[in-house]
Image 1 (tube, one colour):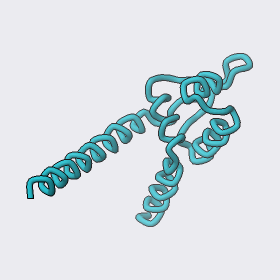
Image 2: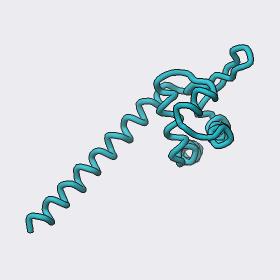
Image 3: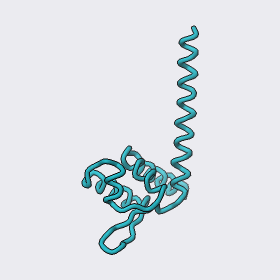
Image 4: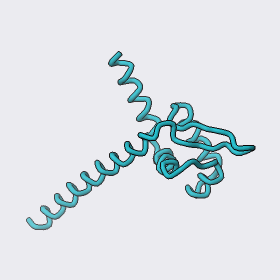
Length: 108
């Protein structure tokens, strides 16, 4: 059982291992969007956005619903928003440590 959980985590983090996929998830954390909205916000080509959405869909990180002819994307689990916030806090902590190290080097 533990091995299954580890494999799930590894696959999940692989799905997040691309800057555009992270940005897509950040955008979807603010609310559901269709592909055209995502392209406009990301300032990227449709094929690039669609490719990254396919990865996220394949790993069940995002889900889709139909609204007429539009496909609407949303986070499959709202906790992803919390995960992204924790990752930002970890980044901020590393940044604080790096700034502190630079200040110590300057003061030597």
